[in-house]
Amino acid sequence: MQGSSSTTIDQFLTWLEHEGKSSNTISTYHQELNKFEKWLQDHHHELVDITQKDVQDYIEFLEGNGKSPTTTDKVLGVIRTFAKYLKKPDITFDIKIIHGNKKDEIETLSKQECEIVLSEVRESENERNIAIVYMLLHTGIRVSELCALNVSDIDFQTKQVSILDTQGDRRLIPLSEELNVYLSDYMEGIQPKEAVFVSKTNERLTERSVQYMLKKFQISAQKLRHTFCQHLIDQGAGIEIVSKLAGHRDINVTKRYAKSRVPKTEFENAIRRTFS
Image (cartoon, rainbow, N blue to C red; front, side, top):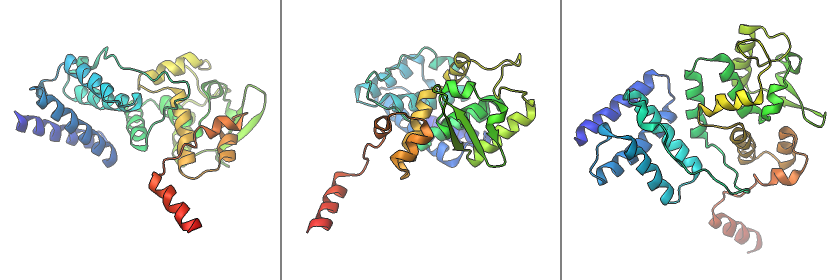
């Protein structure tokens, strides 16, 4: 049976490749499925015969071992896609998962997790939703700001978007190359008159409708905003720059993202180099 499971994984990975997944995404799926398969075999179960109970038990196992809500969300997303491939999507329905309750905890997506989410959104082939997710992730704007966007706020020549916040102040945010492409494709397709993002009945999208759409991809606008800020900090962007791009009125809010990920030995080495 082990050979059968391994063959199924290989076929699944080939399927992902045909679906247009990136090599990084496929590698992530492979790693997570191998872990899941080993856990199943330790409990005398096989990957090809997984049940809803297996999925729930594995998620509880991960949570019991201190895995973060972000990690368990990612793993469940991998299993969900695998279940879709097996044509058994029901085994991932109604899975109970613990969500973080710590007020100070900032949940973000890793680069690999971002790629998984974006890949899933692109697969939906809904140009509006693709543009929305890229806009939220690549600009870090709030849902309220996204819903308030007008056509006049987008400048494709300078590749910038002008954001009006709740205080009536504006800030300019550059459009990434990918966002520029997906946003222009969407807008060229529907030719919006005033509001950028509209419903099927051509009405301005509500915050609730955007949040409902994001929930289908197991993400939230808040997590995408946190990810935008955290990735900028991780890439060396200054606190003040990130604060202005995110529209934070209190720079202490931005400083929360500046948690160090440098190993303790690096700090020790820095002290020795400086003061020895």
